[in-house]
Length: 113
Length: 114
Image: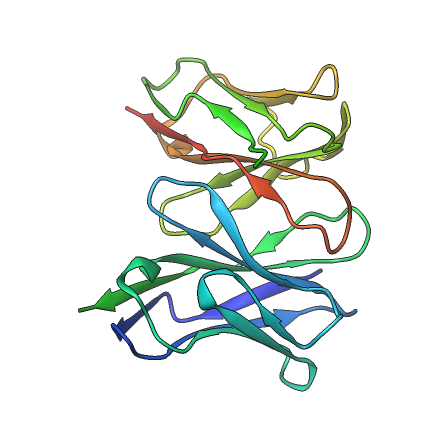
């Protein structure tokens, strides 16, 4: 069964600093990987997804993620944090076929002025 | 941009009462999902529909939860009776295809059981 592990339940960065949110996946076959963002009392919004077309994936709001098969990782980065980036971020994995998304426990990002 | 509609946004109910949530997916999305998200945790799948058929309800507590999607369009999730531990965000999502297709989530229903 596929699963993802997000390292760090809470990450705090200064405004303008690099954002790095870690995600490792477990899958017996090449998976589809996703990052979602959730603001308080809202649903989840897709940031980006890996579909094997390219290992470096660019998403919305300046975020990007790199798929590294050798490390089974799909870490999310942003060069310069903005106050509006403060939210909960979820990594998710999906197999082939009509299997559902499986989410990690999430990482709360705080941005300090 | 098309959205997944959910109602109500917030619901407070007393334990042992019945409660129901409604979801209208994006038009043309055959697959519909209900997830439960406990505060501070990731969403967990409750039930998955393909058109009007249940594909996966292995994590649905069937003694108190039920879900239906009668015409393969909108869906209702019911809890009867509600328990204190059911307090959570209930998220509905829909998708067009398989594999690489992501989901579109609704804004969710925040349930508080008192």
